[in-house]
Length: 123
Ligand code: HEC
Image (cartoon, rainbow, N blue to C red; front, side, top):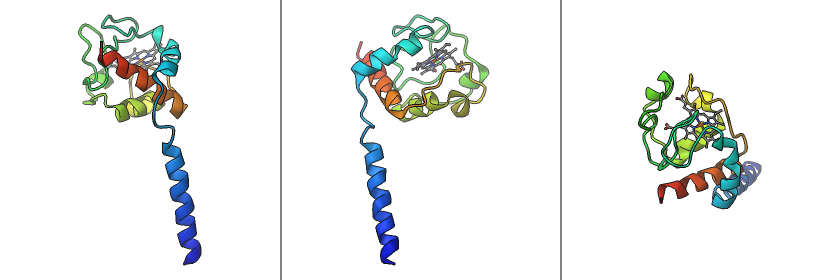
């Protein structure tokens, strides 16, 4: 019984240290956005990918004039920070059939990129 409680405590501590880097750094995110910039504008113009102005809180597949995949159009998602994190971790897993192939495997990088994307909402 005692051992069980101790294991539980260790698990909780590990769990909370995992959350410690949840806060993103927008400045780092701006640099990391170079991975996205070939396809995405920070404004509303579309390139290979849709413009990402105001992306936080925006319904998926709602950039005017962009030809989305059927998968994205039918996803019914709204880009909350959590949903963006899941999509960037594995686009094809989050939205099977999406035409975006680039993933961001590192959780801290994703937090930083999302923090940067948040600044686009303020423009
Ligand atoms: C090689 C081109 C390419 C790169 C690089 C790329 N994307 Fe994409 N992205 C796309 C395409 C194409 C779509 C549309 C996907 C679809 O319709 O299924 C998309 C869609 C998205 C969407 C959904 C937009 C909406 O209006 O619903 C987000 C958010 C996004 N990308 C973020 C990023 C971020 C952040 C990065 C950098 C880490 C990135 N993308 C890198 C091509 C790219």
